[in-house]
Image (cartoon, rainbow, N blue to C red; front, side, top):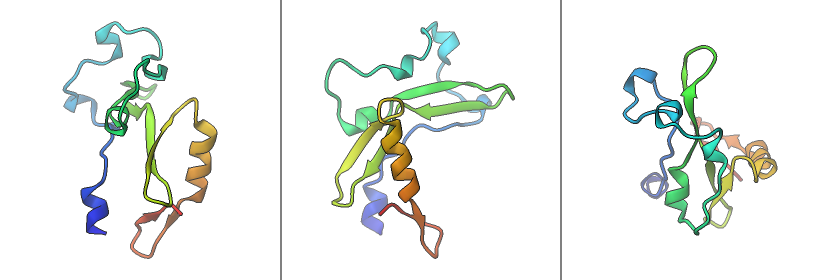
Length: 109
């Protein structure tokens, strides 16, 4: 269990708007949905894990941050990056397979 925690990849997620360190999409003058783009050059799992699809306030004013790729671990231990649009069906399948053990820890398979 300890090896899993040390080998864990941390992804960007929503934080309070006042703790934001980087400018948001509007402040950077980016086009709509820049996080939907898939890079032309191959990227590592770590690079993909840091890409952000959505980084802006929602209708309630809460700041939302959603990763472009969801990193999942296959039963054989291999990590895989699933794109939030292109691989949406596979992401749904992975979520359906999620389980929680007695301690509240997720078990994926």
